[in-house]
Each structure stands twice: as C-alpha cells, then as structure tokens.
Image (cartoon, rainbow, N blue to C red; front, side, top):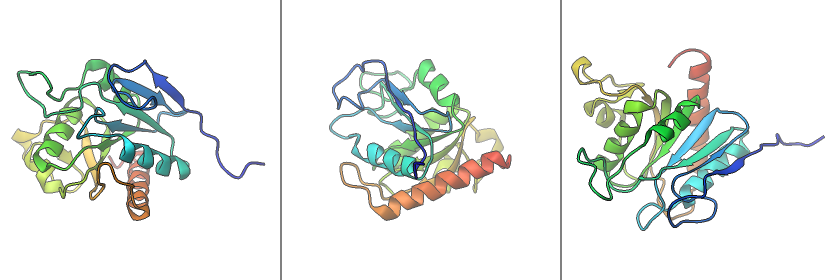
Length: 203
C-alpha cells in the first residue's frame, strides 16, 4: 500500500516554440490525470522565468491536487489591441485548454497594471474561477475596477468584461526565487477553497 496518491502527468503537449527548460517551454501543456486545476504560466524569458510555477505546481501536487501546466505561447509583454510584436496574447487553443479544467491558477509578475490586464485578457475568454498568484500587491478592488468578476468586489454592471472570476489572490511570490512554505500553504488553501466553492456551486 503506497502512502501517497499517484499522479500521472503527460509532459508535454507540443515541442515548444521558444527557448526555455525542456519541461516548460512556451506554447506547451502538460496534463494531469484529472482536469481539476490548470496552472497558467507566462512565457519563459528574462522577466518571466518558470521556477516559481514549477514550485507552486509541485506544492499543489504534494497536497493531492491534480494540476496541469500551460505555458502561454505569447505570455510576455502586456495586452495590446494592435497585437504589436512582443505583446501579450492568448490564442483559441489555449482558451480551450483552460476551459477544459474546473479552475485556473494564473501566475503573473510584479507590475500591478500588467497583472490586472493579463488576468482580464485571460478571463475575458476563459470561463473558469481563478486564483491569481503574483509578486506585486494587488487586491479584488483593482480587478473589479478593470471590469473583472471577483468573489468579493463586484464591478459596475456596465463595466463587466470577463466570463471568468477571480476567487482568491496570493501575492508576494517573487519571480526567480524559491517560494516559501508559507506561500505554498496559502496557495493550497486558496485552491482548496475555490474547488470547494465549485463543488458547492458557490462560483
């Protein structure tokens, strides 16, 4: 009798289009056995590196949470209506991959405006509850002001722009540095709370 639940992870969908570690190149998806949680990571690069996402994913799996990992193909930069070179974007295939899961953990960075705009761009199309993980301090009101559905603060009706909903926020996760046990515990608690809300139809 094993004392842990075995998790099978298909690693990875596609060869990846950019430079990054063999386990987390941009434009790739690794799927867990169940479509419970998908961790959405920005593209690897000078500003967005994958170390925190790998640690967060490991921490969740250690607590028996089934986690897939999607590394966006165009996760760097910020959303831009003209889709200039280097701007953030999410494609239809990535939206389908996120929507196959019950919820998303979206890992972003350290500039508040960029965090809010990226989360909005994802949740405009992805109809899932989400936990946002970032380095900068951001709150539900920041997201609501940008027209994003949140658990605690409702945006003005005429300003609602998203199908998805921010359920929890975990701040203080620094890019490129080892994630503390406290932050891993905070994330696990946030994910379990969101999953329980989904099961109880509270989302």
